[in-house]
Length: 140
Image 1 (cartoon, rainbow, N blue to C red):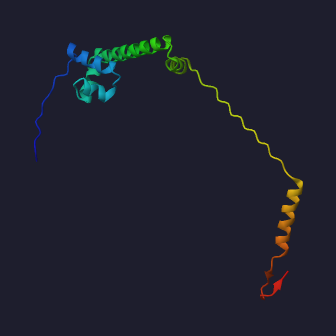
Image 2 (spheres, rainbow, N blue to C red):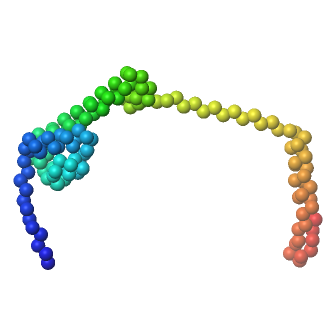
């Protein structure tokens, strides 16, 4: 059996730790990924958020600041004439949906003469069928 070295790390919401959490959240990272990018194990990050609510506030502030930066960039692009950026803002922020219209036109004509000829042909095929009874005699 091997023994693993046990190192107990003190979990504190130092200014450096809070800045790393803020920076990771500002990039859009969440959960375990945020913890690892901030230099902590996921369990340490969760424990820190429970013990010191300021750590969770740093993550929320980072997320809000990151969203604000991207929204500003997108809005500036839309105001400068980027139609795709403007449309994306309208769709995602204001619930716009592109109209969908489906037009189906069917123009089918039935020829009575053709239909009668096809029916007559099917009737002739049925009259030419030979059927054998149980004694193997042909019946028409």
